[in-house]
Amino acid sequence: MVRTRVAPSPTGDPHVGTAYMALFSYCYAKQHGGQFILRIEDTDTARSTAKSEQIIIDSLHWLGLQWDEGPDCGGQKGPYRQSERLPVYRKYAEQLLTDGHAFHCFCSAERLQQMRSEQRQAGQTARYDGLCAGLSEQQVAERNKAGDDFVIRMKVPSEGICTVQDTLRGSIEIEYAQIDMQVLVKADGFPTYHLAVVVDDHLMEISHIIRGEEWINSAPKHQLLYDYFGWQMPELIHMPLLRNPDKSKLSKRKNPTSISFYKDMGYLPEALLNYLGMLGWSMPGGEERFSLAEMIDQFDINRISLGAPVFDVTKLKWLNGRWLREVLDEEGFAARLSDWAYNRDKLKQIIPLVKERVDVFSDLGKMISFFVEGMPDINPEDFEYKGASSDQQVRVLQFSLWLMESDLDWDSQALQQALVGLAERMDIRIRDFLKPLFIAISGKPVSPPLFDSLVVLGPEISRGRLRHALGILGGVSKKKLKKLDAEFRSLS
RNA sequence: GUCCCCUUCGUCUAGAGGCCUAGGACUCCAGGUUUUCAUCCUGGCAACGGGGGUUCGAAACCCCCAGGGGACGCCA
Image: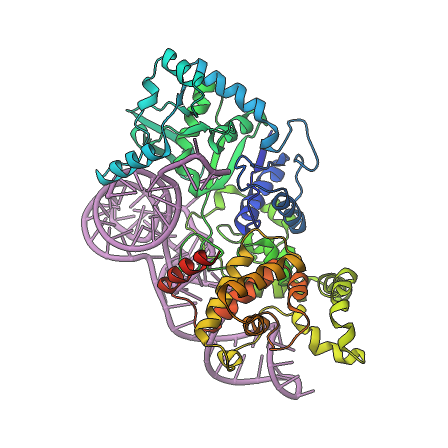
């Protein structure tokens, strides 16, 4: 039985990369009549949020991906949220300890940091030096009794070669000396990814792991854990990484990466999924427009090409256009459009903002068009007015963007509090402070109330417009960014 | 720095030793259809990273180099 999974961590906006892995995992499973599972990897207590988990689920559903087992729909091998599986990890960590495959480590962060920098300076790979692996049972007992913080690390041989199999790449050999004695259980008792992923994939009977190339270097650790437990390692399939136009790993600084962004911009889920499907993979017949069902039907893991593809928004846009005009009839188009743009819920949000400002409906068009536009058509001159230098406006926009990227509640009051507070700390009059924001967000110096508009637009589009405006104003150099960052920190 | 992965037009890709004078698509340019624009159609620009092998024959197989990317966390 083929069983695949996608295992995102709920820390922020769901990434198109997550959708990419989900798509390929889904196709592979369904093509073989198998199951596809969603597992939430929330072992990072500091960064995981329930809100993020919900958006991930909604986003994947929006794309049309359905899982057979998951935290929202249950299943035989649950729970599917790692934070609810703590006793399971504890049990297996104990087993490794008992079998001598893991050890307590009491090293301080300072010592580890120093050790790593020394190793790096000496031209070596940073790797735990094994200090605590040599502690006697008695020493460990004493330190535990004293209540010292500890983590549990896995033992890794210092010599020899670890070979892992990758379906697409064949054998990959990495020397054990290159592999860190990974922490398996953190000081807070939570497992790290490495322990949890191995235990869960085994217990959930995952047969094929489809994940990003960034995990190749961790595969030997996982292989070793499977060996320690006496389990069979699932088949590994490492996908290429999606990239920015400058070839670096796809990141939101350089490209919109959140699934919600594309939804809010008015892309069709079918088109986004279709586009992801043609990155690193192609239909045998060369068709470029294909549905999820067609992709499953024709799917062949061996047709995956290994060169990391650039996520090209221009081509995505073209593909979306094809779906719009070739697949949707007028009825379908109308349904999708009204659902996206002026559905009742959205109108109800907008009406309070404009009701007092109109005399006839025909006043409305220009006033609310920015709610359904992508990036406003603005140029540097739009930002020229007396009382604020362009430099100050860049600072206002950048600082506001950073504020909006932080984990704040996306409601009118919280936004107002945050932004007005920022204006005060920057010692800029609210009026002058908000002006560039109005232009960036609505494209005009006057518009319906800003904070409420931000709520209607949602975080993705709002942030996107601030980035867009910064770009229009000439962009911010790396050096400048660093300077601004320091200034921003000193303000907050 | 160390290790790992990758390498066909600017971008996404086809290519499983002779069908390759390297095909398709996006972008861009030119022309046509259309009251405008868009769509649509026709055409054009544009690539096998470099060097060695193996072979009668290499974009494809092997080796070296270079370039790009990733990983080196009590993040995933």
